[in-house]
Length: 373
Image (cartoon, rainbow, N blue to C red; front, side, top):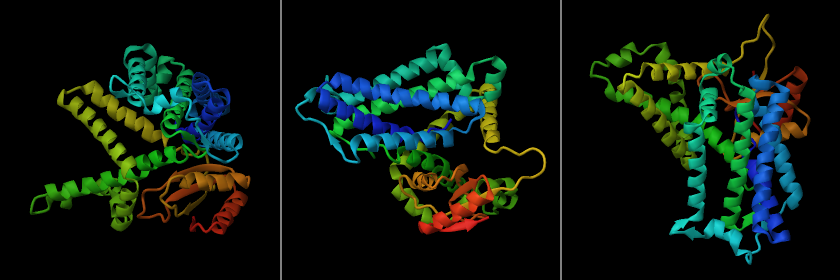
C-alpha cells in the first residue's frame, strides 16, 4: 500500500513528545508517548483499509484522510505554534546530540532499527510473508497467507518508525512544529513516480544514441515499444533541469535505490537464476496490472481533469486539502509524467459531473491552471 500520512504522523508525534517532556519532565514518558501515537496511527491505517475495502483497497485516499486527521491533531495540540524543548532536560537532547563510543546516538538508533527489520525480513517466517506479499499477490492468495494481517503489520511498523523519527528530529533540533513532517512523503513519492522515470527515459535514449553505429541501425529499427517507454524524454529540458536541481536530494536517493535494484537483477542474470529472473518479471507484471482497473460492462463516463502543479513540497496535499475542505470527494489522483498527449501534471478524477464542475471552478478560484478533458 501507499502511505501518505507518514509526515503528518511525525508532526503529531513530535509536538506530543515535546509537550509531554516539558509538562512531566520525563524523557522516558515523552519517548513512550511518541512511539505509542505513531504505532496507534499505523494500526488505525491498517484497520481502516481492511474495514473499508479489504485487500484491494487503494490506500492512497485512505491514508490521505489519516494525514489530514493527524495534521489537525498536531495543529490543535500545539495551537499552531512551535513547542521548544526545555534545555535543562539534557537526557532527551542527548538522543539527538550525544554519542556513545564516538558514534552519534542517532546513527546507533538508525542501525538498530535497520538491523531489527533486516532480521525480521531475512530470518523469520513473517519476513518471508512480507516479501512475498509485496512482490506477488497471486502467490500470496494461493498460499493461504493472511494478507490482511501482513498489511496491518506493515502499516503499524510504518507508524512506529514515524514515532521514532519524531523523537530523533526533536531531540536533535530542540523544537517541534505542527508542520515538522509536512511534505516528506509527497516529495519522496513524486521523486519515485515522476522525476525518476523521466531521468531513466532520458538516460535510455542517450544510451541508445551513444551506442548506435554510424549507419544508425538502432535508430532505424526503434519501434513503437521503445518510443512508448521513452515518450516522456520529449518533455521540456528546461523544465526538467529546474525540477532535478530543486529536488536534488530526493532524486539522488531514488537513483541510488534504483541502481541497487539494477544490480540485483544483473546478479540474477549473471548467475543464470531462472527462478529469480522469472519472479522479477512476474512481480513487475502483477504490480503493473494492478495500476489500472478496467470497468466491466458498458463504458462509464469518466470525470477527469488535469491541472498544472507547482513542483514544491506538499503541492498535492494542498490541492487535496482545498477539495476536502469544500466537501469534494476525490475518486482518484495521480501525477502524469507523459506530457506528449496530455497537458498538465496532476490528474484528478471525480465521482460525478457536479463534483467535477465544482472542482474546476474551485481550483481556478485558487489560480490553478485547469485543463478539462
